[in-house]
Length: 301
Image 1 (cartoon, helix red, strand yellow):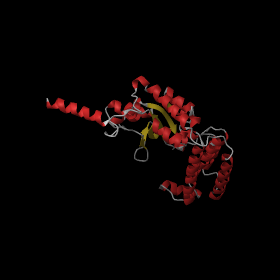
Image 2 (cartoon, rainbow, N blue to C red):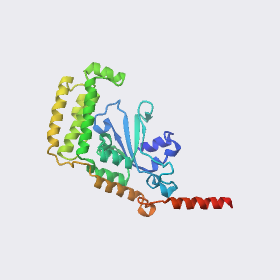
Image 3 (cartoon, rainbow, N blue to C red):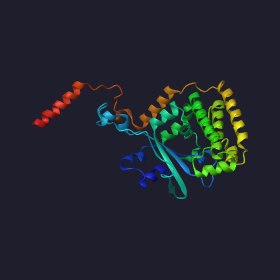
Image 4 (cartoon, rainbow, N blue to C red):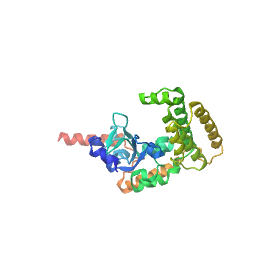
């Protein structure tokens, strides 16, 4: 199913956002479905990558003067949370759309775990994929570096800090903590993050479902108590530190290769003869004044 199209057809996009449908490049089902840990009550989390509009890339070609006009731009749109969840058939769905350029910045250069995971979901969970969308998936290992590992590590440590604080975000989570002594949903996410880090350090790849059986045991509340989990967390994190000292991941994001891939995708969608070559273009004050004088002269006549 094309979820982006459903949102557009059912009035969830404003008029100026309808272009998202035509520029959709890759749309995937994320969350518990992607981890193989879904239950009957699980929502569907949709993440879509969209190509930027040509005026976002080359504003001067479309009548916008750099440094003078308010330039059109798009980074991401979220329809998530209780207020924005929608029912599609029998599925409760929330979704997010992100510009391809922003995706490369956040996932490629900063190692955003949630975004990087979208490139590693099982192919059957890709609901929409263009030629270049699948090309992006094929090159997903370019997004893995020690920066990625550090981002995942920071995310896992943040999750563990919240688990230890036992500060529930909702009434449902409070009841879970009272019953199991810890937030088992947050704990299962921590377990999968640890497994994903081990994979990237040892095989340079990620299978989001590899650790699903242990995660399902945790989500069912049958893994063990908090004290055991706390010890196991520290043990596994120490093991990851050892692996990180001898792994073969690039120490920094592969910025040159990522930029080349991004350019290839943009060139495929917007060929050079269709695009404005304005990267190094300079518009002088003299040129602007001459244009203004011409306009004034025409108006005076």
